[in-house]
Image 1: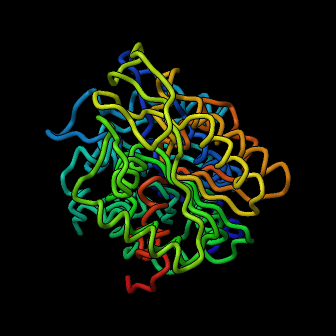
Image 2: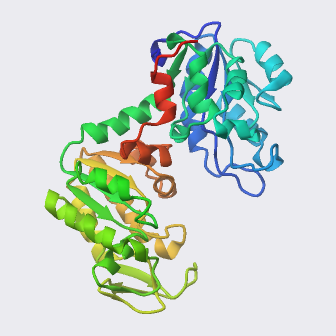
Image 3: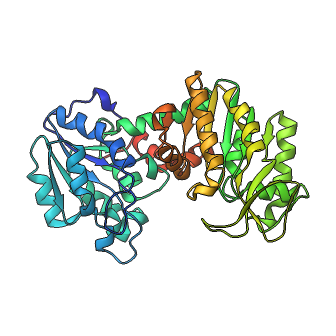
Length: 402
């Protein structure tokens, strides 16, 4: 594996796997370009060296082959804007004659964006021949798509074998993602606080168990908090709750106590009579949430409790919101936690924000520049922390015979 920053791309066609799976509105306008912006330094380094760039990405989940809704053509105008003057071309296919001709004729300093890889089922199947066709388009393979590193797809895990060790590498984004994850995973300064939100305990079991061996404090928020509360005998009303995970929740609480990890569960909630932006709300202690009401955010006592712990931390991992922050009435808890993380970072803590909703929250509250690192990989980061081998990382690191 080559080191990207030291590699000289003069005269080389770099095949870069990026993650341009960005959200669009009904008019095909990008609503959050974080992932695109994150890939720009890698692209620019190749161009500045005198190389050319061929970009590959998936986009959405097309089921029936080519579909206008999922065409990467919708991103072309914004990509041209982000690259400030570079010539950016588009190929209506990612393999086949047009892609081959476009790649062959690409000049130094130019960029070619290939059409959505997932227009072919072979991409998600990790098909060898499909990967081989993609690999034939360029001289060097650069994986800069951390957000898809946990998928064993053709462009992320199979393509690398068609390049020698000195022809394949991670891009600047992938290197930064791995370095920041490693810092939290293996070199966390104490006190280390992990903040976990989201709807289901079942989605976070493995990461909680891993963190019980690493963290000093684990803060539980979001919908999964009500499974813990129910397990402890509290009435949770109509709050989201996994009834088949009550024993597991109690087991995690017990393990935390045995390991000397402080597991914090919300003590009060903003509750609503329906899941709606205009619902009637009230604040209650979590000892008893009335029937017919559901918890949709943490309330003031929990905010104070959690914020105090966060502000004293030296390492912070945040994955998942504290409530339904997309609705204004239920955003206060998530916003307060984001502000506490920013405050701790200002005092010298290292803060890693990972997982789509946490990233969306940090963006919403304009705190991106006030935390240490915002990861572009939700599922990939979780699986990395769970101790799993990510196919997209292993494929580049492994020695292969070409």
